[in-house]
Amino acid sequence: MRKIFLIAILTIGNLSVMNASDLNNNLIELAKIYRNFMFRNSPTTSTFEQLAEIKSSELMNATKFIKETITTGNKLTTTEFLKLPDETTLKYINIIRRINWNITEEQPKDNNKVITELTDSAIPRYELIDNYYEMLFIGVGNKNQPFNLSGVDFQMNKYELQDNTEKGIFFLNAMNLCGTLIWGYMNIVKPPNYKKALQYIKKYPKFNGQPYYQYLDFGFPDFEMVIIKDKGKESYKSYYINRYYNTLLSHLECLSQKKKDKEKRIDLLLGSILKVENYYKYSKKKKVLKELFTTMKR
Image (cartoon, helix red, strand yellow):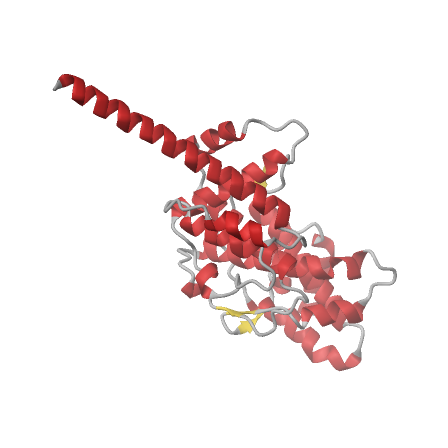
């Protein structure tokens, strides 16, 4: 009887090891698929067959998400994906991205070690949420061409976001994509291509039924995390709000080119955080912002 009991324990132990190994292999496979097709490369039929063969119930939602991020004309801007998944899924998606980072290194670590390190680490919820929405909006920008979110209205109360920090993370990641689309037209082209930049701005989404710039809820506590691969921790608000201010200033500059846009320019100045001096400390263009603020007070 004791012998049978020992055999049963060993069998269960072996199954656990096998399950962990299968889970790791699936995570690594998902990371490789994501790496290969996250940009403009289109997945093949065999790629989707590979994804279909991942039967792990633990990875069901993560697999579905990765599949959507590599799909052309995806549905990432629907509530199904905008709504936060459970925290276990958030952790797996974070692991998938970190493996993706690892396999692009000149001297990558063993992927299983990366998985173990991340599994054993207590990663803050805000970091997991930032990772999720950054991947989501990268998928929107890379796979849904031409860009046009003018018909999208992000209703953030529907996405299981628990506080203003989580809503801020969502908003800033969405606007980071939007700002990236006009950056070249405003900073690389000489003189700036205001017409082209404004065409993109007109395709920006709404948030809670309002133009993007009317979102004002940035009073959440700041926190630090690794935002850029290979850089240390940095202030979340300093990184993202700085970039968001750049987008607002570019929008303002576009509207300053024609007299007919004067009312729109005033709406942008008075309706956005361009007038909120408390947030200027997060911007690298404090002087420009203060000059706007001084002009407004006059």
